[in-house]
Length: 490
Image (cartoon, rainbow, N blue to C red; front, side, top):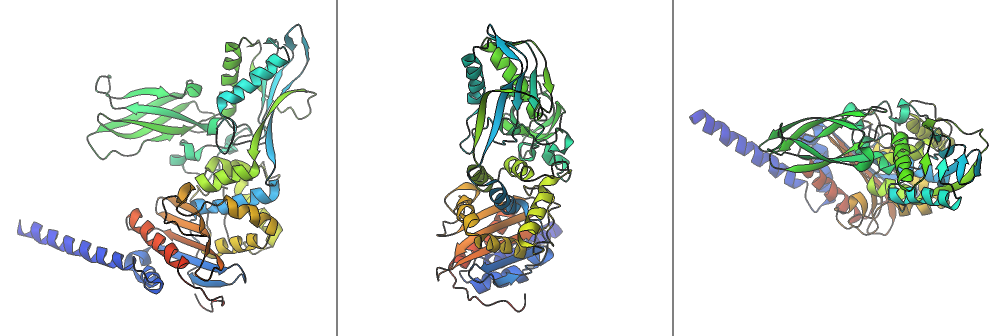
């Protein structure tokens, strides 16, 4: 008993000392905070890096280990967002076309109905100003009615081949734990409803096994969910979906607290097919029967007639969704659409590298991009590379005027809404297990504008503690007057 008490006292003293050392980081003094982040034992065991660059001169005015390559998480979306704006143009709209072959006689289309995808990641999602799925289906049905088409004596042809219709919908560097869940959804030539479905799990003692799967999204009813979920009294573990492209059978694994319900979002394994099945059912309900089958064909060389088209919001609006809401699907798909590397296994990352090289030479050659969203842990960036990107974008007046405004304001909107409200600070956040990162623009007390980036990897402190230190870092940076002289040592 004495030994147990003694060990408990030692543990309490250790916790007290740790908390005391952590509180030093919450100082109102920039020098004290940065010294703490550089020297605290817990931070020294992991990786900490930051960089601050003056937009007037391009010089790095504050830095610590700024050339160290780290996992950037979703702050990588600064690169994909800038690339998409630069290559596709802010006012461009993606167009999903509804076409036909053959002729219309006596209210019959004697030919095929074609849906030709544009890669629009917002189709049917209701996000970024896009119309929702019901409106998309209604628009197609109404267009057929205006053409006086009451039946289709041919096939429904789905053409998603603006991107490969194969396993490369998922970047090969995504981990198995991510790809079955909504944030790891694949990017296709025809995307639908944000490529996700929802399932509600209830720990119901009235069911045979204590678990009830009682609410799956109507458009994904043909998916087969295999639940392996334990019912526990407290501290449940998260529920993850495990599945891959083209696989209708999906495993749900995790824990659920007794007497509780939870809704989880998974990724659709084949959005083009789900869309086709839903459209066919919707048209039948409207009295428009399709007598043929659903087929997938590349229709680039086909002679077709136009029925209608569904336009996406502007590229600027889609990129705002990327930066504000950290939408992985939007980032991945739009990155793939920017050039001709569509046959590569992870083209989004390769396209970022090629864009950077074409625009600014070898300045960013040390970076490693394997996707366009930052979801892979194989992406490697330094904070200096991030601030150099932000600086270089600022020198392109046309690009910068749009890019700056698609970044959310700290404490006001997007994923940084819960940060302190710091006037003039626009940031992209990034987080995953053992990764915290922020990067963007801010103004110091001298009203000069700077690029800022901070990344913390593999520090064994509570995530909220790390976040608190980062918020102190960002707040104190905005209260400091930086001198624009190049650093001689890091």
